[in-house]
Image (cartoon, rainbow over all chains, first blue to last red):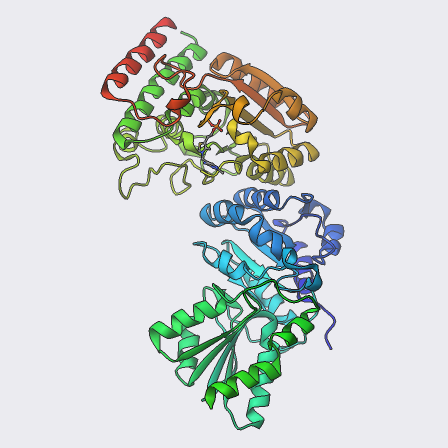
Length: 310
Length: 277
Ligand SMILES: Cc1ncc(C[n+]2csc(CCOP(=O)(O)OP(=O)(O)O)c2C)c(N)n1
Protein backbone atom coordinates (compact mmCIF):
# COMPACT_ATOMS: atom_id res chain seq x y z
CA UNK A 1 0.00 0.00 0.00
CA UNK A 2 1.36 3.42 -0.98
CA UNK A 3 2.53 5.55 1.94
CA UNK A 4 3.11 8.82 0.10
CA UNK A 5 0.21 11.28 0.36
CA UNK A 6 -0.54 13.52 -2.61
CA UNK A 7 0.61 16.59 -0.67
CA UNK A 8 4.08 15.08 -0.47
CA UNK A 9 4.03 14.48 -4.19
CA UNK A 10 3.42 18.22 -4.59
CA UNK A 11 6.39 19.04 -2.40
CA UNK A 12 8.60 16.63 -4.34
CA UNK A 13 7.79 18.31 -7.64
CA UNK A 14 8.26 21.79 -6.21
CA UNK A 15 11.59 20.81 -4.65
CA UNK A 16 12.76 19.55 -8.01
CA UNK A 17 11.55 22.56 -9.98
CA UNK A 18 12.45 25.31 -7.53
CA UNK A 19 16.15 24.61 -7.89
CA UNK A 20 16.06 25.69 -11.50
CA UNK A 21 13.21 28.20 -11.27
CA UNK A 22 13.80 30.95 -8.70
CA UNK A 23 10.33 32.34 -9.32
CA UNK A 24 8.63 29.40 -7.65
CA UNK A 25 7.54 30.57 -4.21
CA UNK A 26 5.70 28.57 -1.58
CA UNK A 27 3.54 30.28 1.03
CA UNK A 28 2.10 28.69 4.15
CA UNK A 29 -0.15 29.85 6.96
CA UNK A 30 1.38 27.93 9.86
CA UNK A 31 0.70 24.93 7.64
CA UNK A 32 4.10 23.85 6.31
CA UNK A 33 4.03 20.64 8.31
CA UNK A 34 0.51 19.61 7.44
CA UNK A 35 1.16 20.54 3.83
CA UNK A 36 4.32 18.38 3.78
CA UNK A 37 6.16 21.52 2.72
CA UNK A 38 8.64 21.75 5.59
CA UNK A 39 11.37 20.24 3.38
CA UNK A 40 10.74 23.00 0.85
CA UNK A 41 10.95 25.70 3.52
CA UNK A 42 14.25 24.23 4.62
CA UNK A 43 15.73 23.76 1.18
CA UNK A 44 14.61 27.09 -0.25
CA UNK A 45 14.22 29.59 2.60
CA UNK A 46 14.43 32.47 0.11
CA UNK A 47 11.54 31.05 -1.89
CA UNK A 48 9.33 30.39 1.10
CA UNK A 49 7.03 32.87 2.84
CA UNK A 50 5.35 32.18 6.18
CA UNK A 51 2.35 34.41 6.80
CA UNK A 52 1.17 33.05 10.12
CA UNK A 53 -2.42 32.03 10.78
CA UNK A 54 -3.88 34.47 8.27
CA UNK A 55 -5.42 32.78 5.25
CA UNK A 56 -6.78 35.95 3.68
CA UNK A 57 -3.31 37.42 3.84
CA UNK A 58 -1.87 34.20 2.42
CA UNK A 59 -3.91 34.56 -0.75
CA UNK A 60 -3.53 38.32 -1.23
CA UNK A 61 0.23 38.19 -0.68
CA UNK A 62 0.41 35.37 -3.22
CA UNK A 63 -1.47 37.53 -5.71
CA UNK A 64 0.94 40.41 -5.15
CA UNK A 65 3.91 38.10 -5.65
CA UNK A 66 2.37 36.70 -8.82
CA UNK A 67 1.69 40.16 -10.16
CA UNK A 68 5.41 40.84 -9.86
CA UNK A 69 6.44 37.74 -11.77
CA UNK A 70 6.56 35.05 -9.10
CA UNK A 71 4.86 31.65 -9.33
CA UNK A 72 3.32 31.30 -5.89
CA UNK A 73 1.86 28.12 -4.43
CA UNK A 74 -0.26 28.98 -1.41
CA UNK A 75 -0.85 25.93 0.74
CA UNK A 76 -3.32 25.85 3.58
CA UNK A 77 -6.03 23.47 4.79
CA UNK A 78 -8.69 23.38 2.07
CA UNK A 79 -11.43 24.23 4.54
CA UNK A 80 -9.90 27.61 5.39
CA UNK A 81 -8.35 28.31 2.01
CA UNK A 82 -11.60 27.82 0.12
CA UNK A 83 -13.92 29.71 2.43
CA UNK A 84 -12.00 32.02 4.78
CA UNK A 85 -10.08 33.48 1.87
CA UNK A 86 -12.80 33.02 -0.71
CA UNK A 87 -13.00 36.69 -1.52
CA UNK A 88 -9.25 36.99 -1.91
CA UNK A 89 -9.38 34.05 -4.31
CA UNK A 90 -12.20 35.71 -6.21
CA UNK A 91 -10.83 39.25 -6.41
CA UNK A 92 -7.05 39.04 -6.11
CA UNK A 93 -6.50 35.77 -7.97
CA UNK A 94 -9.34 35.17 -10.40
CA UNK A 95 -10.55 38.69 -11.17
CA UNK A 96 -7.11 40.28 -11.27
CA UNK A 97 -5.91 37.19 -13.16
CA UNK A 98 -2.79 36.44 -11.14
CA UNK A 99 -0.74 33.28 -11.52
CA UNK A 100 -1.53 31.84 -8.10
CA UNK A 101 -1.95 28.14 -7.37
CA UNK A 102 -4.08 27.64 -4.30
CA UNK A 103 -3.26 24.28 -2.77
CA UNK A 104 -6.01 23.05 -0.48
CA UNK A 105 -4.55 20.35 1.72
CA UNK A 106 -6.35 17.86 3.96
CA UNK A 107 -9.32 18.44 1.71
CA UNK A 108 -12.80 16.98 1.77
CA UNK A 109 -13.41 15.15 5.01
CA UNK A 110 -9.76 14.20 5.58
CA UNK A 111 -9.80 15.80 9.00
CA UNK A 112 -12.49 13.31 9.99
CA UNK A 113 -13.54 13.67 13.58
CA UNK A 114 -12.30 17.27 13.82
CA UNK A 115 -15.73 18.16 12.53
CA UNK A 116 -17.36 20.37 9.94
CA UNK A 117 -15.17 23.42 10.67
CA UNK A 118 -12.33 21.37 9.22
CA UNK A 119 -14.14 19.80 6.28
CA UNK A 120 -14.08 21.33 2.83
CA UNK A 121 -17.09 19.71 1.23
CA UNK A 122 -18.07 23.01 -0.40
CA UNK A 123 -14.86 23.88 -2.17
CA UNK A 124 -15.78 22.65 -5.66
CA UNK A 125 -19.04 24.58 -5.55
CA UNK A 126 -17.40 27.71 -4.20
CA UNK A 127 -14.31 27.81 -6.37
CA UNK A 128 -15.88 26.64 -9.61
CA UNK A 129 -18.47 29.42 -9.42
CA UNK A 130 -15.70 32.01 -9.79
CA UNK A 131 -14.98 33.05 -13.38
CA UNK A 132 -11.34 32.40 -14.33
CA UNK A 133 -10.77 30.01 -11.40
CA UNK A 134 -9.92 26.42 -12.29
CA UNK A 135 -10.56 23.50 -9.96
CA UNK A 136 -8.47 20.34 -9.91
CA UNK A 137 -8.88 17.32 -7.66
CA UNK A 138 -6.24 14.76 -8.55
CA UNK A 139 -6.65 11.13 -7.61
CA UNK A 140 -3.26 9.63 -6.82
CA UNK A 141 0.28 10.85 -6.24
CA UNK A 142 1.41 10.23 -9.80
CA UNK A 143 -1.40 12.26 -11.27
CA UNK A 144 -0.85 14.95 -8.64
CA UNK A 145 2.77 15.29 -9.74
CA UNK A 146 1.78 15.55 -13.41
CA UNK A 147 -0.80 18.17 -12.55
CA UNK A 148 1.67 20.35 -10.66
CA UNK A 149 4.13 20.12 -13.54
CA UNK A 150 1.37 21.17 -15.93
CA UNK A 151 0.27 24.07 -13.71
CA UNK A 152 3.84 25.38 -13.72
CA UNK A 153 3.56 25.79 -17.48
CA UNK A 154 0.71 28.29 -17.49
CA UNK A 155 0.09 31.62 -15.82
CA UNK A 156 -3.51 31.37 -14.67
CA UNK A 157 -5.00 30.96 -11.21
CA UNK A 158 -6.05 27.52 -10.03
CA UNK A 159 -7.36 25.78 -6.95
CA UNK A 160 -6.28 22.23 -6.29
CA UNK A 161 -7.44 19.98 -3.50
CA UNK A 162 -5.59 17.01 -2.09
CA UNK A 163 -6.45 14.78 0.85
CA UNK A 164 -4.51 14.28 4.04
CA UNK A 165 -3.84 10.56 3.83
CA UNK A 166 -1.89 8.49 1.40
CA UNK A 167 -4.22 6.86 -1.08
CA UNK A 168 -3.72 3.74 -3.12
CA UNK A 169 -1.98 4.15 -6.44
CA UNK A 170 -4.02 4.12 -9.59
CA UNK A 171 -1.22 4.99 -11.95
CA UNK A 172 2.50 4.27 -11.76
CA UNK A 173 5.87 5.82 -12.32
CA UNK A 174 5.94 4.46 -15.87
CA UNK A 175 2.27 4.71 -16.67
CA UNK A 176 0.41 7.90 -15.82
CA UNK A 177 -1.58 8.97 -18.83
CA UNK A 178 -2.13 12.69 -18.37
CA UNK A 179 -3.31 15.43 -20.62
CA UNK A 180 -4.06 18.82 -19.08
CA UNK A 181 -7.79 19.42 -18.76
CA UNK A 182 -8.60 16.02 -20.22
CA UNK A 183 -10.23 13.30 -18.15
CA UNK A 184 -8.37 10.02 -18.00
CA UNK A 185 -10.44 7.13 -19.28
CA UNK A 186 -9.81 4.28 -16.85
CA UNK A 187 -12.49 2.00 -18.26
CA UNK A 188 -15.04 1.99 -21.06
CA UNK A 189 -18.47 0.52 -20.44
CA UNK A 190 -21.78 -0.12 -22.19
CA UNK A 191 -24.05 -0.15 -19.13
CA UNK A 192 -22.90 2.51 -16.71
CA UNK A 193 -20.35 5.33 -16.75
CA UNK A 194 -18.76 6.43 -13.48
CA UNK A 195 -17.31 9.92 -13.32
CA UNK A 196 -15.17 10.43 -10.24
CA UNK A 197 -12.49 12.73 -8.89
CA UNK A 198 -9.95 12.69 -6.09
CA UNK A 199 -10.20 9.93 -3.53
CA UNK A 200 -13.36 8.56 -5.11
CA UNK A 201 -11.57 7.37 -8.24
CA UNK A 202 -10.08 4.32 -6.56
CA UNK A 203 -13.34 2.93 -5.08
CA UNK A 204 -15.03 3.61 -8.41
CA UNK A 205 -12.28 1.67 -10.18
CA UNK A 206 -12.80 -1.22 -7.79
CA UNK A 207 -16.53 -0.98 -8.39
CA UNK A 208 -15.91 -1.43 -12.11
CA UNK A 209 -14.20 -4.75 -11.32
CA UNK A 210 -16.99 -5.87 -8.98
CA UNK A 211 -19.61 -5.11 -11.63
CA UNK A 212 -17.68 -7.01 -14.25
CA UNK A 213 -18.04 -10.14 -12.14
CA UNK A 214 -21.79 -9.59 -12.27
CA UNK A 215 -21.72 -9.20 -16.04
CA UNK A 216 -22.21 -5.43 -15.93
CA UNK A 217 -20.05 -3.33 -18.21
CA UNK A 218 -18.93 -0.15 -16.45
CA UNK A 219 -16.80 2.74 -17.66
CA UNK A 220 -14.86 5.18 -15.49
CA UNK A 221 -13.51 8.68 -16.01
CA UNK A 222 -10.94 10.17 -13.67
CA UNK A 223 -12.25 13.73 -13.91
CA UNK A 224 -9.44 15.42 -11.99
CA UNK A 225 -10.18 18.56 -14.02
CA UNK A 226 -13.47 19.45 -12.38
CA UNK A 227 -13.29 22.89 -13.95
CA UNK A 228 -12.82 23.21 -16.85
CA UNK A 229 -14.82 19.96 -16.98
CA UNK A 230 -13.78 17.78 -19.89
CA UNK A 231 -17.19 17.78 -21.55
CA UNK A 232 -15.96 16.19 -24.72
CA UNK A 233 -14.75 12.97 -23.12
CA UNK A 234 -17.70 12.97 -20.75
CA UNK A 235 -20.30 13.15 -23.51
CA UNK A 236 -18.47 10.67 -25.70
CA UNK A 237 -18.33 8.09 -22.91
CA UNK A 238 -21.78 8.87 -21.54
CA UNK A 239 -23.30 8.15 -24.95
CA UNK A 240 -22.06 4.59 -24.70
CA UNK A 241 -23.82 3.99 -21.35
CA UNK A 242 -27.38 3.76 -20.06
CA UNK A 243 -26.74 5.45 -16.73
CA UNK A 244 -24.15 7.96 -15.59
CA UNK A 245 -23.04 7.99 -11.95
CA UNK A 246 -20.87 10.76 -10.50
CA UNK A 247 -18.90 10.04 -7.34
CA UNK A 248 -17.26 12.75 -5.25
CA UNK A 249 -16.13 13.71 -1.78
CA UNK A 250 -18.22 16.86 -1.67
CA UNK A 251 -21.59 18.18 -0.60
CA UNK A 252 -24.42 17.00 -2.83
CA UNK A 253 -24.89 20.38 -4.48
CA UNK A 254 -22.69 22.37 -6.80
CA UNK A 255 -19.93 19.81 -7.14
CA UNK A 256 -18.81 17.40 -9.82
CA UNK A 257 -22.26 15.80 -9.87
CA UNK A 258 -23.98 19.06 -10.67
CA UNK A 259 -21.60 19.72 -13.53
CA UNK A 260 -21.91 16.21 -14.94
CA UNK A 261 -25.70 16.43 -14.70
CA UNK A 262 -25.74 19.75 -16.54
CA UNK A 263 -23.47 18.53 -19.30
CA UNK A 264 -25.15 15.16 -19.81
CA UNK A 265 -28.67 16.53 -19.34
CA UNK A 266 -28.20 19.20 -21.97
CA UNK A 267 -26.26 17.16 -24.51
CA UNK A 268 -27.09 13.44 -24.35
CA UNK A 269 -29.90 13.04 -21.80
CA UNK A 270 -29.84 9.90 -19.73
CA UNK A 271 -30.27 9.16 -16.07
CA UNK A 272 -27.57 10.77 -13.90
CA UNK A 273 -27.08 9.72 -10.29
CA UNK A 274 -24.90 11.85 -8.00
CA UNK A 275 -23.14 10.00 -5.22
CA UNK A 276 -21.75 12.45 -2.70
CA UNK A 277 -21.65 13.30 0.98
CA UNK A 278 -24.99 14.19 2.60
CA UNK A 279 -26.23 17.73 3.16
CA UNK A 280 -25.40 17.61 6.85
CA UNK A 281 -22.32 17.62 9.08
CA UNK A 282 -20.83 14.24 8.27
CA UNK A 283 -20.53 11.47 10.80
CA UNK A 284 -17.33 11.48 12.83
CA UNK A 285 -14.64 9.05 11.74
CA UNK A 286 -11.64 8.37 9.57
CA UNK A 287 -12.05 8.94 5.85
CA UNK A 288 -12.56 5.21 5.33
CA UNK A 289 -15.16 4.96 8.08
CA UNK A 290 -17.03 7.94 6.74
CA UNK A 291 -16.93 6.75 3.12
CA UNK A 292 -18.07 3.27 4.18
CA UNK A 293 -20.91 4.75 6.21
CA UNK A 294 -22.27 6.69 3.25
CA UNK A 295 -21.73 3.94 0.71
CA UNK A 296 -18.88 5.80 -0.98
CA UNK A 297 -16.83 2.61 -1.32
CA UNK A 298 -16.46 -0.01 -4.05
CA UNK A 299 -19.32 -2.16 -2.75
CA UNK A 300 -21.67 0.79 -2.24
CA UNK A 301 -20.93 2.29 -5.63
CA UNK A 302 -21.29 -1.07 -7.41
CA UNK A 303 -24.52 -1.85 -5.56
CA UNK A 304 -26.03 1.47 -6.54
CA UNK A 305 -25.08 0.95 -10.18
CA UNK A 306 -26.54 -2.56 -10.25
CA UNK A 307 -29.79 -1.29 -8.73
CA UNK A 308 -30.10 1.45 -11.30
CA UNK A 309 -29.63 -1.02 -14.12
CA UNK A 310 -32.28 -3.48 -12.90
CA UNK B 1 5.10 79.04 -10.01
CA UNK B 2 7.17 76.23 -8.53
CA UNK B 3 6.55 72.57 -9.17
CA UNK B 4 4.50 71.96 -6.01
CA UNK B 5 2.30 74.95 -6.77
CA UNK B 6 1.71 73.60 -10.26
CA UNK B 7 0.70 70.24 -8.86
CA UNK B 8 -1.72 71.93 -6.50
CA UNK B 9 -3.32 73.66 -9.47
CA UNK B 10 -3.44 70.36 -11.33
CA UNK B 11 -5.19 68.68 -8.38
CA UNK B 12 -7.99 71.27 -8.54
CA UNK B 13 -8.28 70.88 -12.31
CA UNK B 14 -8.52 67.11 -11.95
CA UNK B 15 -11.20 67.52 -9.29
CA UNK B 16 -13.23 69.34 -11.92
CA UNK B 17 -12.76 66.37 -14.27
CA UNK B 18 -14.03 64.10 -11.51
CA UNK B 19 -17.17 66.20 -11.15
CA UNK B 20 -17.75 66.00 -14.90
CA UNK B 21 -17.22 62.24 -14.87
CA UNK B 22 -19.66 61.69 -12.03
CA UNK B 23 -22.31 63.89 -13.60
CA UNK B 24 -21.87 62.11 -16.94
CA UNK B 25 -21.91 58.64 -15.39
CA UNK B 26 -24.70 59.53 -12.94
CA UNK B 27 -22.82 58.00 -10.04
CA UNK B 28 -19.53 57.78 -8.22
CA UNK B 29 -17.89 58.33 -4.87
CA UNK B 30 -17.27 62.04 -4.94
CA UNK B 31 -16.35 62.69 -1.29
CA UNK B 32 -13.45 60.24 -1.19
CA UNK B 33 -12.34 61.32 -4.68
CA UNK B 34 -11.89 64.85 -3.46
CA UNK B 35 -10.05 63.88 -0.30
CA UNK B 36 -7.65 61.51 -2.04
CA UNK B 37 -6.83 63.68 -5.05
CA UNK B 38 -3.75 65.38 -3.61
CA UNK B 39 -2.34 62.01 -2.56
CA UNK B 40 -2.74 60.59 -6.06
CA UNK B 41 -1.35 63.68 -7.75
CA UNK B 42 1.70 63.59 -5.47
CA UNK B 43 2.29 59.92 -6.19
CA UNK B 44 1.79 60.01 -9.95
CA UNK B 45 3.38 63.35 -10.74
CA UNK B 46 6.19 63.55 -8.22
CA UNK B 47 6.88 60.39 -6.25
CA UNK B 48 6.46 57.24 -8.36
CA UNK B 49 8.29 56.20 -11.52
CA UNK B 50 5.19 55.09 -13.40
CA UNK B 51 4.16 56.27 -16.84
CA UNK B 52 2.66 54.82 -20.01
CA UNK B 53 6.23 54.47 -21.31
CA UNK B 54 7.44 52.21 -18.51
CA UNK B 55 4.24 50.41 -17.58
CA UNK B 56 5.73 47.00 -18.42
CA UNK B 57 9.14 47.69 -16.93
CA UNK B 58 9.73 45.25 -14.05
CA UNK B 59 11.46 48.07 -12.17
CA UNK B 60 8.49 50.44 -12.22
CA UNK B 61 6.96 51.40 -8.90
CA UNK B 62 3.73 49.59 -8.08
CA UNK B 63 0.49 51.16 -6.93
CA UNK B 64 -2.72 49.53 -5.73
CA UNK B 65 -5.83 51.63 -5.20
CA UNK B 66 -7.17 49.85 -2.15
CA UNK B 67 -10.05 52.30 -1.68
CA UNK B 68 -11.22 51.34 -5.14
CA UNK B 69 -14.47 53.27 -4.92
CA UNK B 70 -12.46 56.47 -5.43
CA UNK B 71 -11.89 55.29 -8.97
CA UNK B 72 -12.99 58.59 -10.53
CA UNK B 73 -10.05 60.39 -8.97
CA UNK B 74 -7.80 57.53 -10.03
CA UNK B 75 -9.12 57.63 -13.62
CA UNK B 76 -8.62 61.39 -13.80
CA UNK B 77 -5.01 61.05 -12.67
CA UNK B 78 -4.28 58.11 -14.99
CA UNK B 79 -5.84 59.96 -17.92
CA UNK B 80 -3.80 63.07 -17.15
CA UNK B 81 -0.73 60.85 -17.01
CA UNK B 82 -1.55 59.64 -20.53
CA UNK B 83 -2.76 56.09 -19.88
CA UNK B 84 -6.06 56.74 -21.65
CA UNK B 85 -7.85 59.78 -23.08
CA UNK B 86 -9.50 62.07 -20.53
CA UNK B 87 -12.46 62.83 -22.78
CA UNK B 88 -13.07 59.12 -23.32
CA UNK B 89 -13.19 58.25 -19.65
CA UNK B 90 -15.43 61.22 -18.87
CA UNK B 91 -17.91 60.39 -21.62
CA UNK B 92 -17.91 56.63 -21.08
CA UNK B 93 -17.62 56.34 -17.30
CA UNK B 94 -20.22 54.00 -15.85
CA UNK B 95 -22.13 53.62 -19.14
CA UNK B 96 -23.54 50.35 -20.47
CA UNK B 97 -20.75 48.07 -21.70
CA UNK B 98 -18.01 50.53 -20.72
CA UNK B 99 -14.46 49.56 -19.83
CA UNK B 100 -14.42 52.47 -17.37
CA UNK B 101 -16.42 50.71 -14.68
CA UNK B 102 -16.99 51.92 -11.15
CA UNK B 103 -13.93 50.26 -9.61
CA UNK B 104 -10.34 49.81 -10.83
CA UNK B 105 -9.89 47.02 -13.36
CA UNK B 106 -6.56 45.87 -14.74
CA UNK B 107 -7.88 45.40 -18.24
CA UNK B 108 -7.18 49.15 -18.42
CA UNK B 109 -3.61 50.33 -18.90
CA UNK B 110 -1.90 51.65 -15.80
CA UNK B 111 -3.95 49.62 -13.34
CA UNK B 112 -2.13 46.75 -11.68
CA UNK B 113 -4.81 45.11 -9.58
CA UNK B 114 -8.59 45.00 -9.49
CA UNK B 115 -10.14 46.33 -6.34
CA UNK B 116 -13.53 47.36 -5.02
CA UNK B 117 -13.78 45.12 -2.03
CA UNK B 118 -12.08 47.03 0.77
CA UNK B 119 -9.22 45.52 2.71
CA UNK B 120 -7.31 43.87 -0.16
CA UNK B 121 -4.74 46.47 -1.22
CA UNK B 122 -2.28 46.31 1.64
CA UNK B 123 -1.91 42.50 1.73
CA UNK B 124 -1.46 42.43 -2.05
CA UNK B 125 1.22 45.11 -1.72
CA UNK B 126 2.99 42.98 0.87
CA UNK B 127 3.33 40.32 -1.83
CA UNK B 128 4.58 42.87 -4.35
CA UNK B 129 7.11 44.22 -1.89
CA UNK B 130 8.31 40.71 -1.02
CA UNK B 131 8.73 39.93 -4.72
CA UNK B 132 10.77 43.11 -5.16
CA UNK B 133 13.04 42.11 -2.32
CA UNK B 134 13.44 38.53 -3.61
CA UNK B 135 14.41 39.82 -7.04
CA UNK B 136 16.62 42.58 -5.59
CA UNK B 137 14.71 45.20 -7.50
CA UNK B 138 14.56 48.80 -6.38
CA UNK B 139 10.94 49.51 -7.08
CA UNK B 140 8.69 50.78 -4.32
CA UNK B 141 5.14 49.71 -3.61
CA UNK B 142 2.32 52.09 -2.69
CA UNK B 143 -1.29 51.76 -1.66
CA UNK B 144 -4.00 54.12 -0.49
CA UNK B 145 -6.64 53.00 1.97
CA UNK B 146 -9.68 54.73 3.37
CA UNK B 147 -9.95 55.17 7.12
CA UNK B 148 -13.30 53.38 7.28
CA UNK B 149 -11.58 50.57 5.39
CA UNK B 150 -9.31 50.04 8.38
CA UNK B 151 -12.09 48.15 10.14
CA UNK B 152 -11.39 45.24 7.78
CA UNK B 153 -9.34 42.62 9.60
CA UNK B 154 -7.40 41.78 6.45
CA UNK B 155 -5.77 45.24 6.58
CA UNK B 156 -4.17 44.29 9.87
CA UNK B 157 -3.08 40.90 8.59
CA UNK B 158 -1.19 42.82 5.92
CA UNK B 159 0.11 45.37 8.40
CA UNK B 160 1.38 42.58 10.62
CA UNK B 161 3.20 40.82 7.79
CA UNK B 162 4.72 44.06 6.45
CA UNK B 163 6.05 44.86 9.93
CA UNK B 164 7.29 41.31 10.43
CA UNK B 165 9.16 41.30 7.13
CA UNK B 166 10.40 44.87 7.64
CA UNK B 167 9.25 45.87 4.16
CA UNK B 168 10.89 49.25 3.79
CA UNK B 169 10.03 49.24 0.08
CA UNK B 170 6.36 49.51 1.02
CA UNK B 171 4.52 52.73 1.77
CA UNK B 172 0.85 52.80 2.69
CA UNK B 173 -1.28 55.91 2.85
CA UNK B 174 -4.40 56.27 4.95
CA UNK B 175 -6.84 58.83 3.56
CA UNK B 176 -7.86 59.96 7.04
CA UNK B 177 -10.90 62.03 6.17
CA UNK B 178 -12.72 60.88 9.31
CA UNK B 179 -15.90 60.04 7.44
CA UNK B 180 -17.34 56.87 5.96
CA UNK B 181 -20.80 56.10 4.53
CA UNK B 182 -22.71 56.22 7.80
CA UNK B 183 -20.98 59.21 9.34
CA UNK B 184 -17.95 59.87 11.49
CA UNK B 185 -15.45 57.04 11.56
CA UNK B 186 -15.07 57.55 15.27
CA UNK B 187 -18.80 56.97 15.80
CA UNK B 188 -19.02 54.00 13.46
CA UNK B 189 -15.84 52.32 14.63
CA UNK B 190 -13.11 53.99 16.61
CA UNK B 191 -9.79 54.32 14.74
CA UNK B 192 -7.75 56.71 16.88
CA UNK B 193 -4.93 56.73 17.54
CA UNK B 194 -3.76 55.81 14.05
CA UNK B 195 -0.20 56.67 14.96
CA UNK B 196 -0.13 54.31 17.92
CA UNK B 197 -1.82 51.50 16.06
CA UNK B 198 0.58 51.42 13.13
CA UNK B 199 3.56 52.03 15.36
CA UNK B 200 2.66 48.98 17.41
CA UNK B 201 2.64 46.87 14.22
CA UNK B 202 6.23 47.85 13.57
CA UNK B 203 5.68 50.68 11.11
CA UNK B 204 7.35 54.02 10.60
CA UNK B 205 4.48 56.51 10.99
CA UNK B 206 4.25 59.97 9.43
CA UNK B 207 1.28 62.30 9.88
CA UNK B 208 0.66 65.11 7.43
CA UNK B 209 -1.98 67.39 6.05
CA UNK B 210 -3.13 65.07 3.28
CA UNK B 211 -4.54 67.89 1.20
CA UNK B 212 -1.19 69.64 1.07
CA UNK B 213 0.89 68.31 -1.78
CA UNK B 214 4.06 69.86 -0.37
CA UNK B 215 3.69 68.05 2.94
CA UNK B 216 2.76 64.83 1.17
CA UNK B 217 5.79 64.90 -1.12
CA UNK B 218 8.08 65.58 1.83
CA UNK B 219 6.60 62.60 3.66
CA UNK B 220 7.00 60.30 0.66
CA UNK B 221 10.62 61.41 0.45
CA UNK B 222 11.16 60.63 4.14
CA UNK B 223 9.54 57.23 3.61
CA UNK B 224 12.04 56.44 0.86
CA UNK B 225 14.85 57.07 3.31
CA UNK B 226 13.43 54.95 6.13
CA UNK B 227 15.19 51.59 6.38
CA UNK B 228 14.07 48.41 8.10
CA UNK B 229 10.39 49.33 8.39
CA UNK B 230 7.40 49.93 6.16
CA UNK B 231 6.05 53.47 6.29
CA UNK B 232 2.47 54.57 6.70
CA UNK B 233 1.50 58.13 5.96
CA UNK B 234 -1.55 59.22 7.89
CA UNK B 235 -2.88 61.75 5.43
CA UNK B 236 -5.28 63.94 7.38
CA UNK B 237 -7.68 65.06 4.71
CA UNK B 238 -11.06 66.69 4.27
CA UNK B 239 -13.72 64.56 2.66
CA UNK B 240 -15.15 66.51 -0.28
CA UNK B 241 -12.08 68.78 -0.28
CA UNK B 242 -12.45 71.67 -2.72
CA UNK B 243 -15.91 73.02 -2.13
CA UNK B 244 -17.91 73.90 0.96
CA UNK B 245 -20.89 72.28 -0.75
CA UNK B 246 -19.37 68.87 -0.05
CA UNK B 247 -16.74 69.32 2.60
CA UNK B 248 -17.03 67.22 5.74
CA UNK B 249 -20.50 66.03 4.82
CA UNK B 250 -21.06 62.29 5.06
CA UNK B 251 -23.99 62.56 2.65
CA UNK B 252 -21.50 63.41 -0.09
CA UNK B 253 -19.88 60.00 0.07
CA UNK B 254 -21.59 59.09 -3.18
CA UNK B 255 -23.95 61.92 -3.98
CA UNK B 256 -24.37 63.04 -7.56
CA UNK B 257 -24.46 66.86 -7.59
CA UNK B 258 -27.41 68.69 -9.10
CA UNK B 259 -26.72 71.19 -11.91
CA UNK B 260 -26.84 74.05 -9.39
CA UNK B 261 -24.46 72.24 -7.09
CA UNK B 262 -22.13 71.50 -10.00
CA UNK B 263 -22.02 75.20 -10.81
CA UNK B 264 -21.18 76.10 -7.23
CA UNK B 265 -18.59 73.33 -6.87
CA UNK B 266 -16.83 74.40 -10.08
CA UNK B 267 -16.77 78.00 -8.90
CA UNK B 268 -15.36 76.97 -5.54
CA UNK B 269 -12.68 74.84 -7.17
CA UNK B 270 -11.66 77.73 -9.40
CA UNK B 271 -11.56 80.08 -6.43
CA UNK B 272 -9.29 77.71 -4.48
CA UNK B 273 -7.08 77.40 -7.50
CA UNK B 274 -6.84 81.14 -7.94
CA UNK B 275 -6.07 81.64 -4.28
CA UNK B 276 -2.89 79.68 -4.91
CA UNK B 277 -1.36 82.28 -7.19
C1 LIG C 1 -15.47 44.84 1.82
C2 LIG C 1 -16.31 46.02 1.49
N1 LIG C 1 -17.35 46.32 2.29
C3 LIG C 1 -18.15 47.36 2.00
C4 LIG C 1 -17.93 48.13 0.89
C5 LIG C 1 -18.88 49.27 0.55
N2 LIG C 1 -18.24 50.57 0.73
C6 LIG C 1 -17.76 51.29 -0.30
S1 LIG C 1 -17.06 52.71 0.17
C7 LIG C 1 -17.41 52.43 1.81
C8 LIG C 1 -16.99 53.40 2.86
C9 LIG C 1 -15.53 53.57 2.83
O1 LIG C 1 -15.13 54.50 3.79
P1 LIG C 1 -13.63 54.96 3.84
O2 LIG C 1 -12.75 53.76 3.80
O3 LIG C 1 -13.46 55.86 4.98
O4 LIG C 1 -13.43 55.68 2.44
P2 LIG C 1 -13.63 57.20 2.05
O5 LIG C 1 -14.29 57.92 3.18
O6 LIG C 1 -12.26 57.72 1.82
O7 LIG C 1 -14.44 57.22 0.79
C10 LIG C 1 -18.08 51.21 1.94
C11 LIG C 1 -18.57 50.68 3.21
C12 LIG C 1 -16.84 47.76 0.07
N3 LIG C 1 -16.57 48.43 -1.05
N4 LIG C 1 -16.04 46.74 0.40
